[in-house]
Image (cartoon, rainbow, N blue to C red; front, side):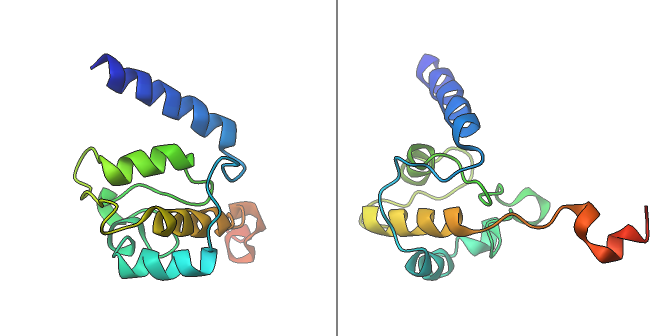
Amino acid sequence: MKHLIGFTLLAALLYTSFANAADPNAPAGSAERGKQLFIKNTCISCHGTLGQGGERGAGPRLAPNPFPFVAVQMQLRQPRGEMPRYPVEFVSDQDLADIYAYLSSIPAGPAAKDIPLLKNFQ
């Protein structure tokens, strides 16, 4: 239990540190290949096509600004909650680096104030 609490605090600290930038400690990956793997491995069924999170809480938002690589890797290899486990035999370390590169490449959407259609409701 102590390890879980420590990991959660560490993950939160790391996430805060990297909230507006890709994790500089992440291995190099191909965003284009990562997008294909994100679809192939059915990540989109819970996390949405752009990592925006699934409907009715199916999966958390992963992009923009994904969690630090080490946290994503830990969740993929030893998941908590209802997420299935993806061992290295199914999603290689390079595949994971590519998926992370894809998630890191997804830009933030526009602010509500910058969407013309929404300006009519202010």
